[in-house]
Length: 254
Ligand SMILES: [Zn+2]
Ligand SMILES: [Zn+2]
Image (tube, rainbow, N blue to C red):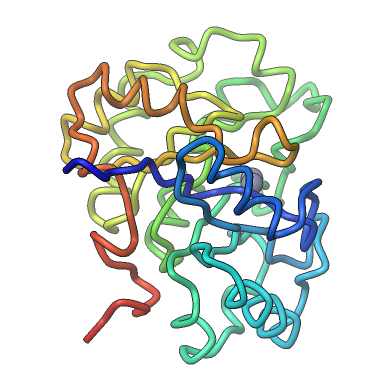
């Protein structure tokens, strides 16, 4: 298709913790030749103004004024996504789900941005909780995309992802996403390791491009995720585009 453009399925505006207005997100995407989304945090446990069902309606009212895909980044561990009526959900072109906290085996949640891991929470135990949380989220949460699937706390980012992710963990994550029909985001902000993305693609799980941009230089810039998808032989038009592939929100039904 001649006029194919990459879709940035995940970017932030000033409705949450982004630096740009919605109009500026749209303008930045136009410069980069990308189709823009706004996917601000929608959660009571994230830096955002969108913290109630009423605020979600106002957020969508605003996004509808612009030529932009209307999304939101929902924390799995926060209950707000469970409170939205179907009439609100249908106003989203697509929804993004995130594991900003993982559920430990003792039932407590642990933030994925924690700068320190308690001594007892070894990398191995953290990854066990991460993968189990991913499986639970895929079962429970009717989103279209799992954001930054390899996001882990900063101390673990120093480790080789091939040590964190056993092949068995990778296979479990792929299976959970495939069964749920959730796309795997290739994040520009938290880049996944190639072995996992290859496994995802080979299993027929859809890939989505996400800048997860907050600043002007990040928003709508999906060049690196797109290059990775292409290097794995994924056709451009197979990359998730809600208008083309539909959405679990029901926005494109009928
Ligand atoms: Zn996130
Ligand atoms: Zn984000």
